[in-house]
Amino acid sequence: MAFVFGWLSNNNNDNNNNNVFTITTCYIEDIVTRIQDEKAGGVAIRTVKSFLSKIPSVVSGADIVQWLMKNLSIEDPAEAIHLGSLIAAHGYIFPISDHVLTLKDDGTLYRFQSPYFWPSNCWEPENTDYAIYLCKRTMQNKARLELADYEAENLARLQRAFARKWEFIFMQAEAQVKKKDKAERKILDSQERAFWDVHRPVPGCVNTTEMDIRKCRREKNPHRVKKVRGRDRLAPTTFIFKSSSLLLLPLPQITFLNIQLDRHCMKVSKVADSLMTYTEQFMEYDPFVSAVEPSNPWISDDTTFWDLEASREPTQQRVKKWGFSLDEALKDPAGRDQFLKFLESEFSSENLRFWLAVQDFKRRPLHEVPSRAQEIWQEFLAEGAPSSINLDSHSYERTSQNLKDPGRYSYEDAQEHIFKLMKSDSYARFLRSNIYQDLLLARKKVSCTR
Image (tube, rainbow, N blue to C red; front, side, top):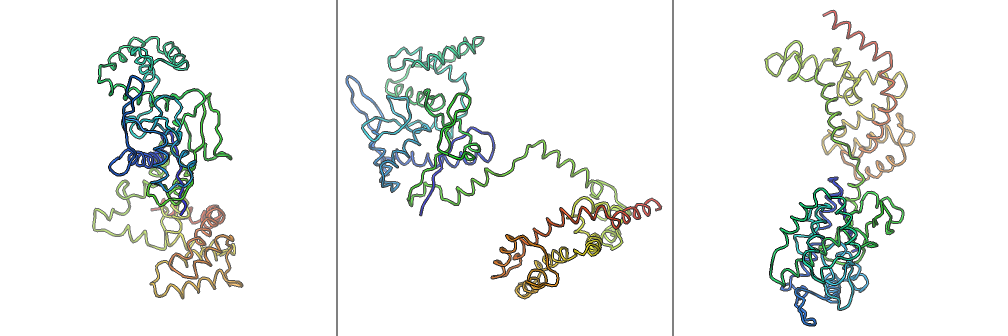
């Protein structure tokens, strides 16, 4: 079975995108954890002797590629290198002698990033954090820690930008430079450098932390690099290969996440405004908020209010409520009768009769469902039906397909289409019709007389 692993990274605060980012990092980190677990067949992490020194806690690029091919059932070495480069681009592994975060299938030495610096555990670093890091580099005065040209330029730029609080930044850097074990300090320095190689990469390298998932998905060519504000943004890379490994993201989950990204999002202020409008509109209909006549049945033994609500002679409040939405009109038995009367005057009552028939169909006992489903089809949808309704081709095909094995919700698509049709067309004319306006005015006069 084919699986798709979409490697995405994003610093967007939107909740849907954060969910995608969390799932992605979980899969990557699961792979990295397995690679480091020597007892479970991971890559051996060793200390390599160099000229007059030792390099602790490293692995070769060839070892990582071989592990990926063996444990993830990858046949092509190029695919394993590509997968490893994606892991490196997000800072989980890094070369100890290069700032370019890619994986090579040779003897190049790599080191695993500390979980403290993993993307799932890190905040979005600020320029002040970067300034403190560069200051520490200048204080340690080691040849291996000398600033590169682009880092020296960044330090000068930051020093000008933070001139007023540079003394504070310098003090922070001094406080963080502490004497540690030589091997431990060497490892920590390289891990911190790799962290900043991800978040402040070498010019010309891709900054994986600045990718906007929504914009990248809309690109016609999702694999090209687009210049944005002087920096590179890389479209999400989708890596396809065959494997039974549980570490890979299955296609249904990819589809689900894509749907979530396309969901319409609203600002909290707009949602709150809609809620306030709804509350104000329905406040007078809530017995717990507003006084009702003749009495509140929830706090007394008088049920007259409920009897009036169920009566076929609607009050002025009920008639007014029909104008809120088609749902409110159809909930009220008197509202349904008046709307049906109006549709009969326009010779389009079959729409409402079909909608009501489907509502009744959903409540039928299970043994009556097949026969009733055929009756509705013959009356409203069959060729030459006496009360034929106007359905779009998609709803018609879905409904006819559902009736091969009929259930209570076989007509769901057709009913929804007819409801939208009535809502956008007939309902608006009903509110402007003499039937509704005369009834609203008559009930208003009755209320005033009382």
